[in-house]
Image 1 (tube, rainbow, N blue to C red):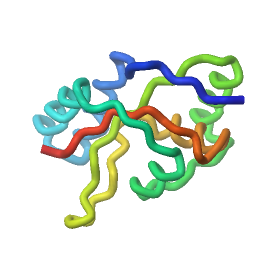
Image 2: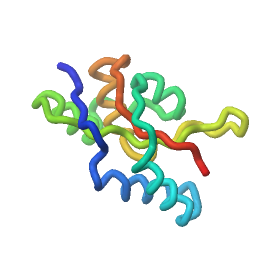
Image 3: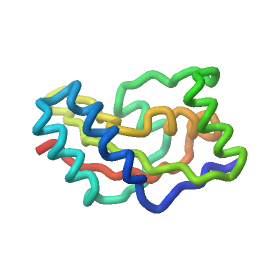
Length: 124
């Protein structure tokens, strides 16, 4: 079983990212970052490194959303790349997974070295 990815994030990923970011940042800044993500670089990072840099725990395999993505991979359905805001070591800010946390966890269970396509931007 191998995770397969779309070449671009889906349109609905950007509003989801803005919604999540608005919990951490002022709404106008969250919207601006989500808009910038549409034009961010597409890079690849390993699932294990994304979890480490974000300081997020690996969700359980039994999590219903992780399960949903594992089933999609079994059916050879393509997953959407994840959306990231770069962290800052100087300010002790971890990487922000604006959209795609469950996809990262599902990919980790398949192979922690899975290269995940990501759009990443710096915080303005």
